[in-house]
Image (cartoon, rainbow, N blue to C red; front, side):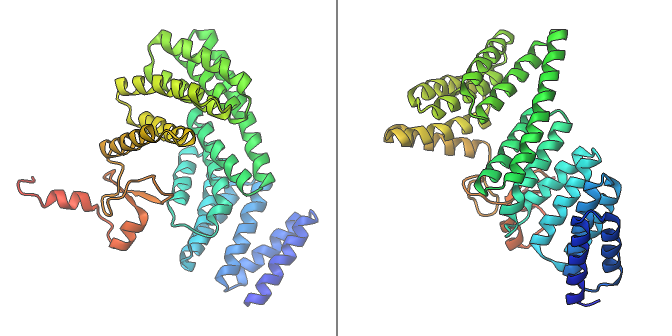
Length: 359
């Protein structure tokens, strides 16, 4: 079966599928898969089979075709096809509740070189990752992923993705509420504080600041009571973002200053990075050049202290939207640098092993 005939048969299957003749559509697509020698056509028909089996709830079949699609994408040696197939693999495992595998495949998607499909599929990758984190009850990570997916939906005017994210957020809200109920019944104050913080972040992300503020206040009260200083930093960061949304920049800076003191006491560099980054934006808006420079300097100091820079090119990680690769030794590099360097082993570890006295 040639390329043109393959396209015609794929289109015929789509027409049957759209007219609810699902089994006939599957038969057409399976014949294409058996007879076509066109790799691109085979890739496309495998995508149709993955989608159809997903919508029918046949998740094991969905996974089977997703695995075959990965092999086809590798034969094609095309990053766009690889991204799409890894996303289908992530979705298949998500449906089968293999959440750790889902997260791993989503991270693989995010680690691929920049592609034409990345802007279109990035939101769906974030959504799938959020659903997996939610399946593992990792609420904060789930919320962060859902917020990323929602930004993709808004930036690309993707109403279908926005609808799917909102459905996931509804499930997220219900699970957090149930966790809060259990925490109250068992007097688990740390869990109560975490749930309240998640509730507040949800309301803030939805623009409901009137509801977010009292939730942050309640979370802060418990965090202070139990002595969770890192939790207090997270609360104050959320409060500062609320004030920024209200254009009350002085109040935002007050909350950031309190959070910075706590973050430095605890020594949490990630929180300090977030706070300095938020402060930069505020100082730039207010034209506070001296303060802006101080935050920029401190931000880069934190980057140095956390070794958030590529071991090959020396550039800071995170300043640009770059793909990263973590090697088994846990050293992190820009993916492009590893590819350009043509190495699969860690340059840092290799240099260390060559130092005099290394055993």
